[in-house]
Image 1 (cartoon, one colour):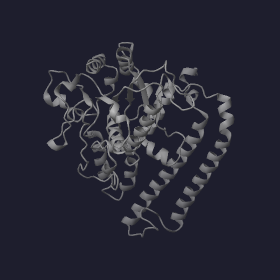
Image 2 (tube, one colour):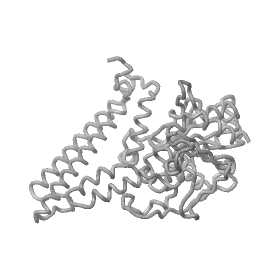
Image 3 (cartoon, one colour):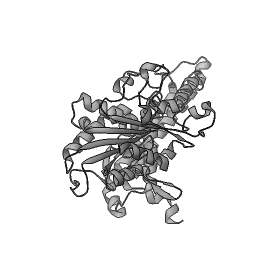
Image 4 (tube, one colour):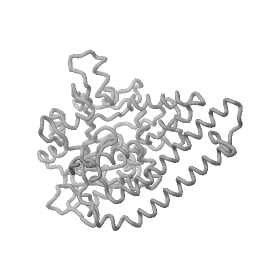
Length: 412
């Protein structure tokens, strides 16, 4: 097998322990699901439950407990052994540069179940980091005055994605909206990499603090901050700005522009459909244990049901329980120029109903901030809105027309 087709080349030493932890959790979850189905069948025959709902009793319950206990012990043993081996393995493989494939897989995994990875201290959980000029920003290796300008562009990716996916291709040529703005207008792009499986507001708090540290530690005085955000990244940006304003941080006063690309300001119907699946699976005793499959999806994904951006939108609520939109309305920030790009896979002259379906993931109205309730509308100025036709959600990142529109807006 050639190196380019060998998936093992993308593994790192820490991945072995992470996969072992993941396999342990998966085995325990499948065991609990099997026990739940077993007990549901017995209950329909009049048999009593175990010590807790969905748990078997007697010898059957003891067997399930034994499987779970042994799985946990084996998993802990493997994790401990691999932890001791990691330094040696890291020296052998020398780590090296992260491959695009590995970064993409980790981003997708974090988007789907990143909250669980973090809760279980799994090494695959992605910490929030800022990156500039192809390196992660750290105090140990600060940037120099010759590498940056005073105009900083914060670039935030969407759900299940990462910072390296801002570079894509159109007609065989590379496209990166942030680099285009940097070359034309003198911005220094700073890319955010984050765990998109966490609640949007959790990432908002983290980003607010990271940007505060960035501004204070930037090699030259920051004269302007602007934000370019795709999809969920736009929600994280709004959340971070609110958190920073509440905490009295300095950087919101430097913020001049926010450009949203396909941001689901009022949520996505795909997550609302997922919530219906939860309800349907939980409606009968036989299917109820399988509802846990749907509930594997992350807090970040369930935030997209209505477009949650604040702690109050989810704290104290069962995120899998079907309920109406009860968000605290957060308007667009005052004193910041906000622009939005909405996409639709339909043609410009197609039926209105086709155009309203949006980019395949985000409806047109949601990306434009429009809502049936006038009090919930986000009011983008007419000349701060752009519709990209025959464009999918991901194609927003590779569209030359979108790049030119963003450039025109920020050139004003």
